[in-house]
Image (cartoon, rainbow over all chains, first blue to last red; front, side, top):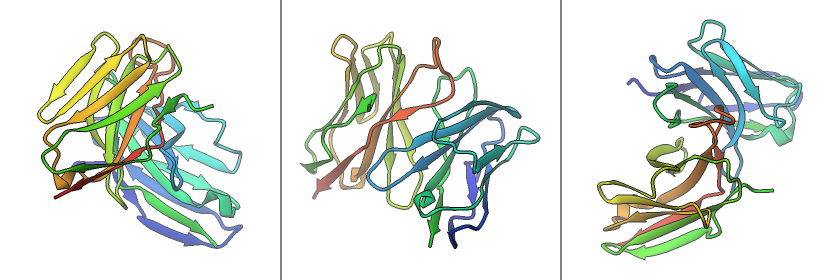
Length: 114
Length: 116
C-alpha cells in the first residue's frame, strides 16, 4: 500500500497527558499537511511542511502543539497537556509540489481526551 | 467567517438520477477548487478538481462546474449510485498561481444519500 499512513488509528488519553501521532506520506511527495476535523465540520488546516521545512502554521495551532518532519519523510504531531477540546480526528495529507494542489489524505487518528 | 460554504447539510437522490452538490466561496484569491468524498471512519478521498482558468472539468460520472463571477461551483454526479453515498467536501486553495500554497480551505460538507 503506497498511500498515506497514520499511526495510531485511535488514541484515548487522560486530560493533561501528552500524545504523539505519526504520519508516513506517499514516498515521492515532498509536501506534508496536518489537518484537524471535528464533528460536523470540514478539515481545518493546522500546518504544512515542504521537505523538512515547516512553512505555514495556522492560528489554531496553539503552543501545546508541535509538528516535526526531521528528514523530510515521516512527520510527527505532538500535543502536550491535552485538553478535552483537543478531541478530534487528526488527518495527515501529502502532495507533490508542481502537480496541482491535490492532497491525498490518510485515514486519520481519532483522539479522545477523557 | 467561512470562506467556503456548503449550505446544504444533506441531499437525498434516487439511484440513476443526477446528484448536484453546491459550494460557494468568498475569497476571490482562490484559484483552485477540489471535491473530496469521505466515508465514515476514513480520511477524505480526492475526487476531482478544477483550476480557475476553466469552467468545467469532467471525469467519468463526475463533472465540476465553476462560475467565477458568482463565486460558485457545483459537482454533478450522473448517474448516481448507492456507493456514492458519503459526505462530500468542497475545498479551495490560493496556491496554484500565488498566495498561500500551503493549505486547503474546506466547507462543512454535504451528506449525500443515494437510495436504490
